[in-house]
Length: 338
Image (cartoon, rainbow, N blue to C red):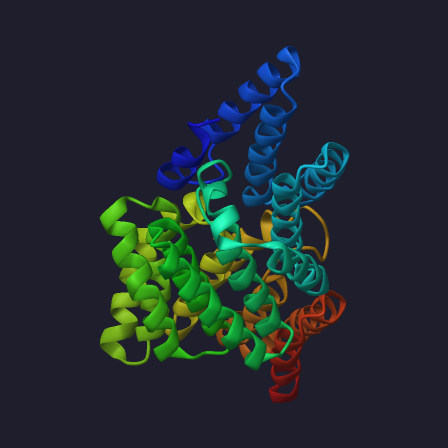
């Protein structure tokens, strides 16, 4: 159980090594009847499933943790179960679920009482996570004011804790949510300090994704686009293997290639992201992947209008079902332009 969080921080949260450690811990916990240890082991297995995009399994494991924590009456474990629930909802593209569970977690969190939990559960502070993931969901829901407030609170809390991994978590996810609306300066303001922390402390989870965010933000002229393409070539493998948001990184890679005049390569990255969706219509950033795919099809050949229109309609339909107002607006704009 002590080995799990540092492995997540330095090797990536979805690695097989992490799953093996927590599976072994769960076996031991069940054998000796250690309910607290068993909860922690199952929490680690939940996180591994969630980050690995096994979305149905992650949902089921989060529900199991809610049951275990309510049965035990352990308030810390219940708070961590909320943590699992808002994260699972976010990765599944469930905007309303993310906000609902995030509100429960934020209301229950107390920095002095709960700051120690990061050492036991996933290596990052759950209060920071609750604020920044709820903020990202608010951005997707079209509520930029709420996003800016929650994002600022997440960064302030991480800095007050002086916890480097939680700081990188807040900075990187803030930059990611700013990327949704194309705010390049804000992306740089979050991704640069996230990258500095990742390189200083060896946080593989945040390093490559921060590099890609910086590359995306700088891809506005010939030199910036060339640098961005080089960043994609160098970092996309690590960004997919270790980052908590591989589909977002592949989406950015596809967009960078589109801007660089290489739509065929862009399609390859987008199709790679879509290939691992394990439930139809379920998944964070899924509407944007379809929208970007439509744009790449048009850039390849204007005769691809019907296929592009189908991609935009799919993006709009999924965004509407997910409550992703921002992404639905992007898809509607693409349809209008077509």
